[in-house]
Image 1 (tube, rainbow, N blue to C red):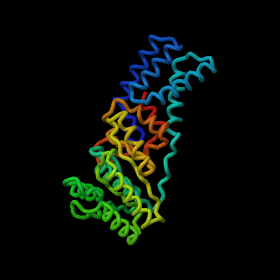
Image 2: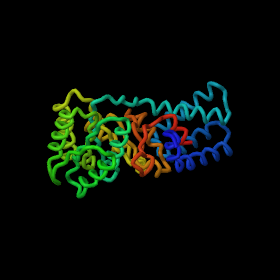
Image 3: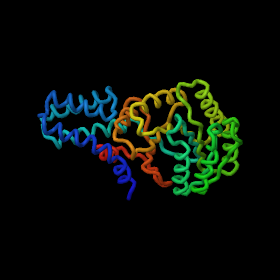
Image 4: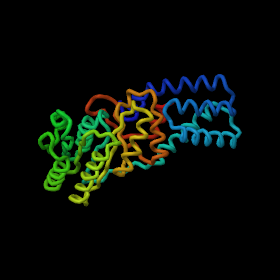
Length: 298
């Protein structure tokens, strides 16, 4: 199964949910004011934010009226095009090597698993990879990451449990420079976005990377659980304000029936989705593709 079909396959629950509602809408309503109001409600019920839903539907309405079209297929295609444009409002950063990727996010979203999958992804691109075990607080986090590093056949830098995460990052960056490694992945502890001291710790790690290896391209990716829906939006906003996010990695995309919040992330917060987790296997992490996401959504 190719990349794109994996993303579409992962969105089966979302597609079933949205497509059924759209079919019912076209059956019972002629394309007019009542139709557009209900279309907006369908998008909102799929976790598209109210603001984004209003903007998208208004654009669909203007285009349809301007073209004097009341054809179901035309309106559906128009909706897809506008939603794809919304996803593309936040351009995906080009990965340049050597690169350092710091994974941030709240507890339980799958950062450690994502670090392992990213290690495998880059290893398959024939890049040398190093993982930094900067989650020094969660019991067994370091051991879990060691298992992933072993599966991906990449190196790992670790300290004792309870160590200063910034010290781990410092040693990992030093090792990366010494061995001319292509990719460093930094796994950080989960933290509630309302805890100021923990957010300051992220900023400290950020400063260590920028100071010690300014020649490397540095990306901060927020890991989001796709099943959390609208809560993902507030998480993204706070982490973006704290550490200037470069992108988002969605996990558990195959577990959600409401993936609409992704449109709001890109359209309103201007933070692109870079990767999507589409299953539990090591290789089940794919580059995000806006067109295929929209095709999978309907």
